[in-house]
Length: 591
Image (tube, rainbow, N blue to C red; front, side, top):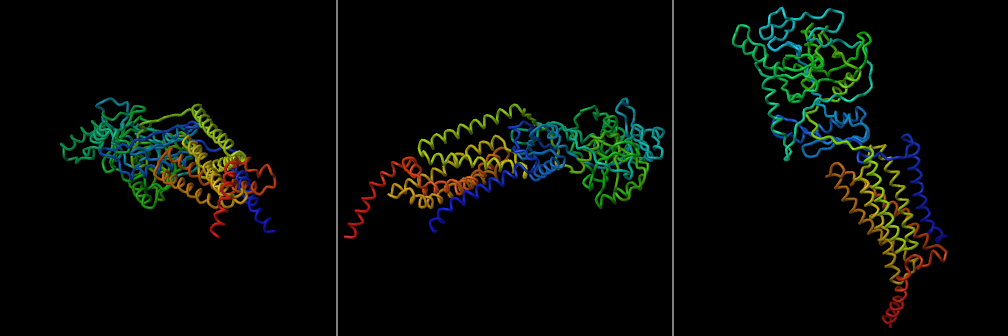
């Protein structure tokens, strides 16, 4: 009974491994849609890689701000459904990688989304002739000394959108809320070349400072009506600011993300059809609690629904109460996305933004407001698109390299270990089944994407797994060389070999873990697959390789137990020669 119990141990280990494989593949085929395909990275299935460069007025961006921006971009990607996105820091840059056909989303994930609420002082159509003064808002003194007859009357009651040049819809309590289909936010970033040392191009910093000096000149603030000199200075400042502002389609604004909320601002708006003179910010966009888009049945248009936090609700209620029939500009990245009239006081913070939005534009704006503004402004300094054809070629090359590596290992094992080599090949095959199932499940559970670097890690892991077999088999040879039989050498050889295997795999796993923690991008993928394969190597060696060797050693088949067929014939002969010598020495010692 003891003998039977002893030799049933390998069978139990093999049964445990079979159970693990069955469970894994049941999860592969019966969960997550049942598609047994791992999630592939950009270099295998194609996609887009975007490098973002921070834009600051001077110096270099702070690391804490860059890390916060990285986290927020990653949150945006998950929030709007851009699956498989990887967002990492690379020095002073942020690198966004999106596999598949979602490149447009990747290029727009870094929209600044710096929202502020400002009161409109005056507005001017973009097509207005130079020298013609902007129209003043009702209730305000004429801008730049313009006659009061230029002031545009407020819209009629009833909630109708404003149709005057400075109009941009209305603000009121939301009547209906209905979500729409996600869409990527529009991009309006200005390029900012990066210097070799990682600092921002001096030309970009100069443009920011110049634009701020003109369009946020403190002289734009209302002047004392009894001071002709101050009035003249303000008139000149307003004319200069409006003249300097380029509101043509696709024009780049150097002030994006770098405007001062404490100063007045001259900005474009209404889809680049109007220019606005705005007061300093009275409410920051950070006070927004939630945002969503929907179709307002009463107005027959798409709107953005906002709700504010506690302090924001108070400020908004106070402003809307004191400025009924005045315009409030919703300024996103120095662009007025909506300049609606305040129809009624909004006391509960639930607000609608109307601005002649399409469904896509409304969803874009709500997504941006919902996921917050970035602490820095970014420009896309590099965007690389990898085609699916190139990705497939890369995958085929990686699989070919792995196949050649496996073939070389197979030939070596068969030539050097013979039947033990067949056990090695079987173990490697079962290890491959285990690794593939884990890759598929990790892609579903944690979003892991397999890239070329990961494939390289898997190929190197073949050598690590084969090395464990070599350590075991060579330890068996040492035992047989000492004069033991194959049957008695297996348990002793395994007891010694497993310590070496554990130490070797432990070092490999530790190296992979450290590399994963300190590396970024593709190198992390390499380290992850290397570490994962190292752990699975231990599972295969303990649950497959050793039990199979133990079963062969106890087999009653003369063919299987013949050391010559196991590649152990030469060492057995050497052990047979050494055995009489050891016996003779023992007799001499006893005499």
